[in-house]
Length: 212
Image (cartoon, rainbow, N blue to C red; front, side, top):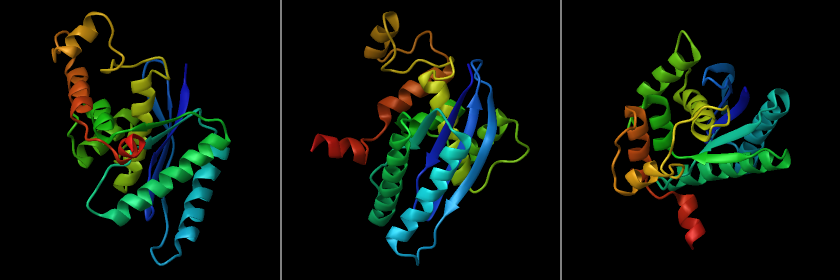
């Protein structure tokens, strides 16, 4: 089964958006990639409107079945965190209006899914995205490549396309026992990196707010 996923790397100045079709054999094909931009000089409400219209146009034109958004994390730059969270909220609302399921993925999850290494840098992620999609060049800016990585990660990690790697929460039987004991026997290098990334992922702003 082939599924279409919209990946969103939220940001107020630059919002990466990428759409891929992923087949049951995990083969991914580029559908659309872009970076939505707004000027810092615009009033906040206008910036949100510009980004929301861009995302809305993509949803209506390409009709993805799933939406994947990068999970918001605490950073020293409060204004960056706020802008990212605001755009995430816009994307969540637009998806909900269309009845689309949304999943938030941590950067470590995405890196592990795409490169097999949860601490990979942006260059490594971009290079693997280009290789996976059969592109001659890495999509630029990095926001665009990150959005595509999110979309691919979602299809692979959740099994939406029929192919997936096990995660810590999905392991059962012997696998669950191994995970509980921090054993990775029998797992591929990518699976080991994936589990390590999940275990070491910092607590996100979203998770913290839910605990309050």
